[in-house]
Amino acid sequence: MPPRTLFEKLWDAHVVRAATADTPAILYVDLHLIHEVTSPQAFTWLRERGVKVRRPERTVATMDHSTPTTPRGKDGKIPVLDNAAAAQIAQLETNCRDFGVELHALGSEGQGIVHVIGPELGLTQPGGTIVCGDSHTSTHGAFGALAFGIGTSEVAHVLATQCLLQNKPKTLAITVEGQLAPGVTAKDIVLAVIARLGIGGGTGHVIEYRGSAIRALSMEERMTVCNMSIEAGARAGMIAPDDLTFEYLKGRPRAPQGAAWDAQWRKLPSDAGATYDREEKFDAPAIEPMITYGTNPGMGMAIGARVPAASNPTLAKALAYMGLEAEAPLLGHKIDVVFIGSCTNSRLSDLRAAATIFKGRKVAPGVRALVVPGSQRIKKAAEAEGLDRVFLDAGAEWREAGCSMCIAMNGDQLKPGQYAVSTSNRNFEGRQGAGGRTFLASPLTAAAAAITGVVTDARSLV
Ligand code: SF4
Image 1 (cartoon, rainbow, N blue to C red):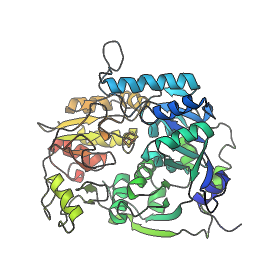
Image 2: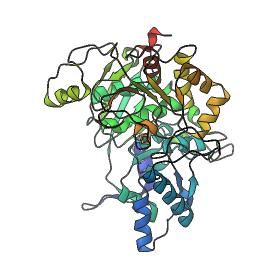
Image 3: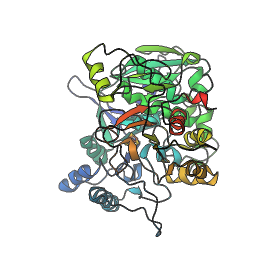
Image 4: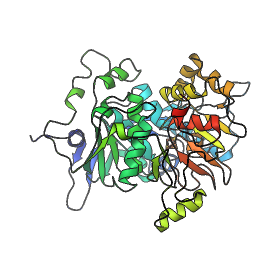
């Protein structure tokens, strides 16, 4: 057999029927993650046809997108004041009960953002195919899984058949070599990649991130990188599993147990001599802390750079929406809100990084800072090491787990015209609230802005 890439090995192992001239391939799905917003119509489709969930034991549900993150009441419960959210939550409970699907319900120990709890529980494993009705399913690729977002009709298809129709993507190697400078993070790597590739640069491809800078990242940092692959238009992002991956999974509730459980996974990395359809190379020491200035994640730059000239109508429209002057610096630009959270940057290491900036300082007057852990387990772990006190003492809000201001479906949103520095993954017009304006950045950069009230290079505060 000729040398194969990580992606090709996974693809070959999961094709149930190869593509024909008229039809895509049929791909087997190992794990289907669902949540309250993109699953209700799919279950209705099953009910109307009298169809059962094909592999309920391979389907896991959580509540995250529309759930509130406001602190619990005196009764220990998280209040749900929005009628639409309450209906979605109740519907998911009914659907999971009726179809025998495991549910991590609002406020329960295992609840959290769908792409945070999969790895946390050990459900996300190397060599598997994972789908979810959310674009940022690519997060799970950090474990050497082939993971991608699907639409609502595809959610129904996977529930009914445990398979998916797919055209085979091409492969794109993103190789990042060298050592990152202090204060430069995984988020900066991926924002730099998207800034160079553009939002369509990865279209039709699965990205494999390689090189010494990627290997040096922790599993949580690898998740941040893979998470945003979709923002370059890629179908998925992957990183070959290694000892760090196996160590992360060891002992997690749903990870396989036993001495030889990782033997098969060691065969997954791309073979020597395997070729990719495309390759892009990045020099890690040259990457600076990044920030976006526009209305898609490809409109990003080094934090000390100047906003580009409005050289085309798309850029001119973006700068007009953002209220930014072309060719002006972004450093020192006033902000109103800081959001630290989302499936990109809400894990324990993200919170620890933010806490290094908040510790012993106060949030700037007039700034609202929300810190939203990605899961109930992360919340508990952060509280056990006193991170909640660091944020609260600084004047930030410490919230319950959920997607929060990443998607603004849950009461956490910007007011029209407000500026936010956000650790989430999308800065589209209105994404964080109608008329809201988002600068995407790392937890360090977001925390620094919370303290100073303006866009700040976090390296000046450490
Ligand atoms: S945090 Fe944002 S991107 Fe991630 S799953 Fe939730 S809504 Fe989707």
